[in-house]
Image (cartoon, one colour):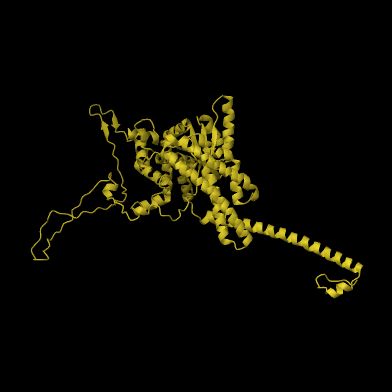
Length: 528
């Protein structure tokens, strides 16, 4: 039979002219080509799926990076439009006068009068003061004033034998012989470690107020003297941390610009409801936390899922077990689990809006709906947690209702996780939740244990912002100063204490050889 091109149509009358052997040969050739087509088609489908998968991941990674760089830092969900609260929409709020809003500020009363009495607009007669006034208030400010103090220490002599001279003792100073007063040292240090103003900017502000050429380096040096002067209060903070049964732990990078072989240091933070304590180390090893836990009475450690803390708890528990002491229970931060589901949902939502290919878009929409399930469960859990915070005596009872929501999320993860790539955002979030499930729900049975590690992250916020402002420290001494002053300042904030009032009182008491006190003790004393 003449070789027939399978792609050419064969007329029916020609097929009828084929012999039996030619028909068999034609059929076999057609089957071989059909099998080849089917094989090539399957390969193309597999390649298409692989390309679709890669395209899906690339799009997901792109949106994730875009959200991290340009997205909102807040994790609060955007509230949808609703009619709640519309009844009070037109209700006007009472505007407080400055004297009502700030009752502790001095009030200056000023009368505005006319030097030349006006004439009546009706009859032209000269008018007189009626005694009535139209009152208004406003807030004002007096800019900071710098001045030089010339100190004269009088000398005393003996009028009889003239053999002795005594000089009046100099007032106690943070640094003897310094060019700056205690008030100046405290103001500059708190401008940096409380208000996050770099010393260079502080010097520039002082220059605009008339003190030009103030050297930033000498101000930085004065902050080192202050930190050393209040070290005893810092040590008492550690004692408060060691006595606490519930500890929060977190860490953040701290850059060492010079002065040490290691440039990558870490600021470790340990905190309670009323105390914040920082240490700066040149390592991220869990041994840092282990050293503190071994000295502590800690019963519960709340942290993120960093392996260093897990190692620290295990190492500490081994030693405690040998001494027949109570073991530490490790609770993980639920905000981190919720955050992973939220990040996945944001990525998937953006992909559903940006992908035009139908199959990839349908897949993104399906995954987006799955991610919303977990966010809704966490929303219910946190709503109940808010209720538990309002009624502490019912915390245990309220928290028992959380378990069903956690179990729903666990069951959904177990049934769905195999259907998603381990590299996808939602796949990672579900695996993360399942792997650490028991640590996430540990807080349910203990009213004193918080649901997440957000308090520790809030305590670290100022050091992180400060790090971005002045890039790092220039020596291990600077890192230690940062740890001491940030510890005391953040502890003041936890106790709702004005850091400037606290440092002023602390320095005054230390100069009189009185014992140091922590912000918590200062707040307790103020209440009593």
